[in-house]
Structures are given as C-alpha cells and as structure tokens.
Amino acid sequence: MRYRTLGGTGIEVSVHCLGAMMFGAVGNPDHEDSARIIHAALDQGINFVDTADMYSAGESEEIVGKALKGRRDDVVLATKVHFQMGEGRNRSGNSRRWITTEVEESLRRLDTDWIDLYQVHRPDYGTDIEETLSVLTDLVSQGKIRAFGCSTFPAEEIVEAYHVAERRGLGKFRTEQPPYSLMARGIERSVLPTCRRLGMGVLTWSPLASGFLSGKNRKDQPVDLSSGRAARTPHRFDPSIPGNAAKYDAVEQLIEVAEGIGCSLPELSLAFVVSHPAVTSVISGPRTMDQLDGLLKGADLTVYGDGSQTRCFTHVNDVVGALIAVAEHPNANGEVFNIGSAQEVSMLELATRIKHLTASESRVVLVPYDIAYKKGFEDMMRRVPDLTKINRTIGYKPSMNLDEILLSTIHYHTTGSSVAAA
Image (cartoon, rainbow, N blue to C red; front, side, top):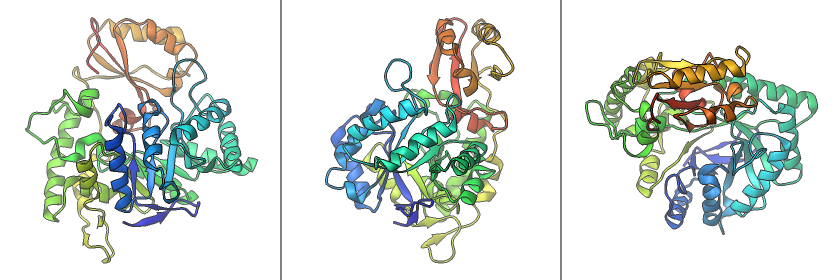
C-alpha cells in the first residue's frame, strides 16, 4: 500500500480510502459482515476511512464506529455533514447552527472523541461561506475535529472559500472530495489544478463511474435494470440511450487494454485515478468482501509509471479521450428539460413550467440547486401530482457536462399519468 500526505495537514493516508456508503440499509445491512470488510481493509494497509452522516441515515457511521473499537488510533477517520437528517427544518446545510448540532451526533454514532477530517458534503448557497468556515475553525480549536474539507465544490467556490479564510483569519478547506473516473473527467479542467495550486488534498469518489467500469455490464448483453444501481437510476445504464451506448463501446475497448496488461477493468480504473498528480486518495465503497479484494488486487498498478512500479502503461488516454465530455444524455423521449435558474424566473413561473411537464410525456427534469432551495419550492413540488423526487444532490451550473449534471443535480422524473420507476 502506498501513502501520501493529505494536503497541508501533515497526516499520511493510504492512496486507497475505504468508503463506507454501502454499509447499512442502502447496501450491506449486516453489521458484522460490514465490520469484517473494514477489518480486512485495515489489515491490507488502508488507514483512511470515509463515511457521512446521511449514509443510511447514520447507520454507516454507527457500523464504522463499532468496527474501529481498539483500532481507532491507527485510522484517519473522515465523515461529512450537509444533507437532511430526520424531519423538520434547520436539519441540513452548512450553517453554524446545524454543524454545531450534527458534529455531536456524528461523534456519538462513531463512538469517538474526534474526527480527523470533517467535510461539508455539498455547497450551501443559503449560508455565507464565512459562517461555515468560522464554525469549522471553532471545532478544530475545540479538538472535536483535526481538519476540515469540502466535497463536490466547483473550482470558483473553492477559491472563494480560500480567500475568505485568508481575509478573516479562519481555517482553510484542506481537502476536496470530487467525483472522478475514466468516464467523468470534468474536474481535470479546473478543480484539480485549483486544488494543486492551493495545496489541498483530493480524495475522489465514484472511480467505477457508478458501476459502468465494474465490467459487469457489457455491450450487446442484456442489462439488468431491476436491481442495484441500475434499478435506482436506470437512465444511466439503458443501452438504448446514445450517451450510454458510447460508454458501453468504451468499456469494451478498456477491457481489451486491461487484459493486455494483465489486470481487470476495475483495477485499471482505480489506477487511472490515483495516478493523477493532484489526487491524494481514491475512495472505493465495497459492499462485499469479494468487491474489496477485487478493488485492492491491483493496488500496485499505475497508469503513468516512472519505472519503479511493478506494472506501468501509458496508452489509456487514447481510449477514453473522447469521453471527457458527453454531449447529451436524452431520456426515453430524447429530451432533457432544464427549468431555468432562480434568477430568471419567479416561483409562479416555475410552478407553471413544472405543471406543464406533468401534463406531457415522460421527461427527466434538471432542477438547479439555487431553485431547489429557494423558499417555497419544496412545498410547491409536493403539491404537483405524479411527481417523485429520486435523487437529491446539488450544484448544477450551465458549464457542466452531462455526467457532472447527473452527479450533481436534483432530479425529478415525471409522467403524465403515473409515477415513473426511479
């Protein structure tokens, strides 16, 4: 196992980080089996574990906390805050009020006195960044956290946070946690260069592109859309969609590359991510022991080698270069509908547009974060018939490519007469 320093913290972490999202009701509900996976990862040299308060509504943190009993001092423990926890208002976001409350809950669930890396899971456009940095700085002073970072922040907001911290004498974000894979490379344009310039550590998530790079689904073979990730987001795996068809073509080529150097597609995919000079660690979230073994099998593999690695290769870029940006990702009816920004339209106009959608054929609706958190929007959406919210994340911007939009936008799937499968 290789190790790198996490930003400017002086903390050494393994280049492979164990992601705990799949521990709990969402993935593996067996606490003892999940603990065995965690122990096996630690035994193989991983010293970095990442979870979040919202993973299985806190259950993931509880599993991690139990598993680390007796080994806590050997582990760099990271968790996150931002998303809604429980019912009611003021139970989400990056405000001083919520972070002060929720850090105590995470400490309790993790059964620890401190968190090594506390991350804000997404930006909060309703909270001033100085407010967030201020409370996180206080938590460091109180000894409850050792360092703090951000997750899925665009480059311009990382820079803004840095300059606010400089001007106000506050602690800085030491890390960023973005999605990054062979098929989602948008962060290469600005996020990774920005983090490198500011001396931030980078721990990336979704190295297998939501399962596309697992090798499980192949071109010209039936795709099971009834279980796993494909069941939750079938539009990402449906081979009849042109954007997906291009990905399946790339998968076949990448499998050939992997076989040519004697590794699996998942091994190749993780090696590509950790080989970027700005990346500190790649987060892998296994659900089973077999998945963990498969992910760590090629821990010595690197894409760009200097001769010191056991196996090296340099031609992967030729295969995946065309996938840096996916031009379009139409749904079954060939359309992706953007309802506009909060600066452009009133709440009444938004309601009119949404109701028009529900009266027409099935569509995928992209809802920018500034709209979704505008006062009254959630209440309005709840009153619209035949509408189901299927994924709540954040951050849509017009400059994003489609993969980034799908990873960072609130999605509503609508039908005219019934709720579509989500």
